[in-house]
Length: 398
Image (cartoon, rainbow, N blue to C red; front, side, top):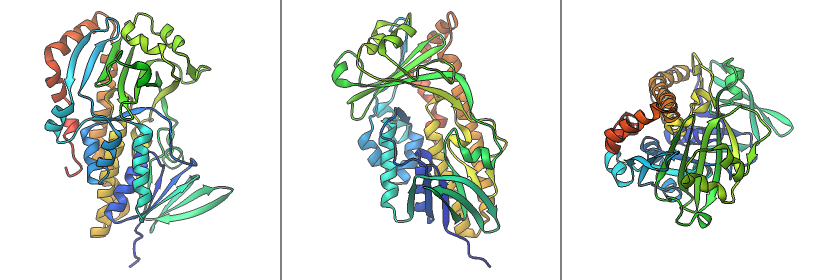
């Protein structure tokens, strides 16, 4: 009987890939992770870490490190971008912790990635291969063999299985799963970080603010210990264009009709960067033998439910748990990957569907937007939060 390898290959050093590496190492595997960049990102924007994602990070013993670099907003204040008035407040803070057992956090993406990368670097069972690009993979009876470009040369790595976590533009998805390129949503996100020194008391730095307008919305929340306000404005936009960066004056002009309480943010010194929003092409399968897609490579979704990173983090936990059975019971790695896909499909599809629904609701024009606002006000913040219980109460033990 051939002894099965305990090495798992992971393609991609983003949040999903790093979380997968940690989860696999904690399960008893040795991990070879390949990231084509020279180092991990120090730039980027904020993201939201909901209680379901934090449950995985807690299990991996890194939640305390994440909390140290994150902020727990007291509430999500839903605002009218035209009038500047609050529509409803959805309680978070202590209320979310009591309801879900864990807080709802916001964090700078680079800070979260650095926490995960440091934890991986500290684990003797994880080897981080930087400037390493997965070019191809072949599955066989003993697992997989990957062809990796490293510098001017090509090297082969073998393992029990391969986790493709190389993002929405996944090369491995196109090469191994014969899938098309990512699909542009027709939307563009303009992102900026504004220092709290500039803002002072002129903007709410305690809460997440969700600003709703016809065919557009914005979200703001503090990151990096409250030293910066993360601002994201999502509008209609083409995937390509000459204006990859804009000035605050250009942004203010583009949002005619918005309340001055929001547009005043464009008066501060900040770099506004364009991020076209893509989703993954429809895939009939995420797993092919001992090779599986995870995170955005499998199911990149629009950010209207703030669950893109969370779903990738969840993927990592379930994938590692399924592969654990290969060690515990001698199951086949291909069967473990099929079980992973089966375990994740329904929930991820529901989260992606929620994002599509929220997109329609957030961007409603009058008079439908008025009906939406009245409905939210009548429901109230507590009941609006309760609608997310199926999302936030999830734990990797379930």
